[in-house]
Amino acid sequence: MKTVGIPRSLFYYYYKDLWEDFFNALNISYIVSPKTNNLIMNKGLKIADSEMCLSLKNYLGHIDYLKDKCDYILVPRISNFKNDNQTCTNFWAAYDIIKNLFDIKILNYNIDLEKGQTLKKGLYKIGKTLNKKPFQIKRAYKYAITKEKKRLKKNHQINQNKLKLKKTKILLVGHPYNLYDELIGKDIIKYLIKNNIEIIYSDKFNPKITGPLSKKISKDLYFKYSKDNLGAIIYCQNQINGLIFISSFPCAPDSLANELAMRKIKIPYLNLVIDDSTSFTGIETRLESFLDMLGGKLND
Amino acid sequence: MKDCYLGVDIGSISTKGVIIDENNNIITKAYIWTEGNPTNAVRKLLDILKQKLPKDFQIKGIGTTGSARKLIGLMLKASVVKNEITAHAIGTLTFYPNVRTILEIGGQDSKIILIKNGIITNYAMNTLCAAGTGSFLSSQAKRLGIDVEKFGDYALKSKNPVKIAARCTVFAESDLVHKAQVGYPKEDIIAGLCKSVVLNYLNNVGKGKKIVGPIIFQGGVSKNKGVVKYFKEILNEDIIVDENSHLMGAIGIAVLAKKNKTGHTYSLEMKNIKFQTKAFECHRCPNSCELLKIYRNNELVDSWGSKCGKY
Image (cartoon, rainbow over all chains, first blue to last red; front, side, top):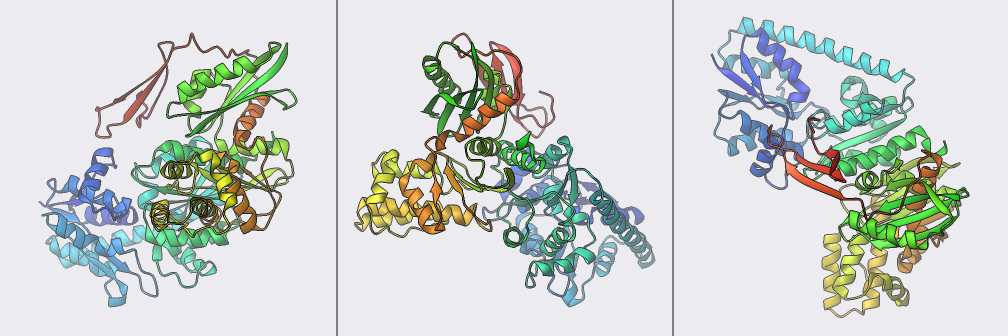
């Protein structure tokens, strides 16, 4: 029986549940790399080119961890979702970068809606590579995609409920692979929760609703994930106390999205850029003062 | 005996101390260089303050702020430990209740604080990059062989400031070297440098922020008359620089210490207190956390840096 390795970084945070449901339904065994730790990150930093963004460096560290622990490593190429919805270049290039840097077997599929390469075709390809019968793949795909749609709806509902709460609410804007990563965003989330803040995650909204709203900030932006993030800001800007924009250094789409939002949004705004040299002391100073400001504590 | 309150602001470049009375009047103050050793700097600072403080005052509260606030907070057993943005805003509001914008440039940080009706409405702080802050100015002063305190006077002499890239200090520095090598006079280069600090500030932390008067400029760099001049010119607004503009953080934290009384009386005597930090790396898991243990009189008071919370 072949084992598939899933790096816990980048794509994982968009597709983890879908992939796991799909593999479980097909009875394929898989392993996920552990939560990022310093060993993984440092390995990634060593392998990576200095110009790559922190998140991609981290991804390489996870691949390195998995390279001799499984038969295949799952590395998709996600290029675009049609109609001016491109992903960042790292999502295009990940497959080629990995192929050049590592001597491993890669399990790959493409998402390129402009060329008609859909998620469905992608997962069918994977099933076929792993020697599954078409009827099995069809059943597994249906099972995974139904659950995924339900999950999307539920997450959106949870966020909407949170927006109605009377607590201090902060919209955390960023890519899920940064927000939920153990070394990149986790400390920030922990700090906010400790201070009794209700966190609303930008990636948990339904992109079909938030994506088009980004037009209010920019009509020309063509990065899908940035559009979703900006849309989420527009969607809830009147119901939150402030927003924190987290990005990894030097993320190109984020540097653009952040500038656009910062100039057009009129609520308290904090931008945090995370790099491998970042100590939490600097971040803590910014978070603490940001919360002081939202709480209006100056006057007591 | 009269009550008074001590505020200590330990920045990357300088350490500031202020003692205020019940009515926020400054009784004594001190300003020294940190020189990379915050605990030593604070010992020196307290010695100076102790000599200056009249005998009929007793200290009823201590607050610390600045980048070494936690460490020094433990050392002095401070009653309040707060970030410098809040401290600066409170200090300024104590003397200028009508202020709308605070521009602040310190040793490694720069920030802008927007205030409406005495409440902070928004602020921004430089991100990863320390471009255009005090440490850049002092390193360039060393290169030009001039005391950084005299920068302002040189800048005011110039009629024709050179153009220096304002985005990034690495580019700024190569611009600077180039301009010096082709023979521009020192005062024009220094004036250009001061102008680039202003442009850099407005492009980085000031972007998208509406700057309305009254504007107060503070932090160590506010003592530089050249930078003040270019802020005035570029913003086309009057810029207020308080005589104690470099001490506002310390004043703010002293005001906070006054508000958070513990009833305890503090001493400025630090000679008998042994304060040590020990650093080591834990190898129990792949995270390899860098840990720092802090001892006060050989007793472990805190340890930092652990991800799992074991220490």
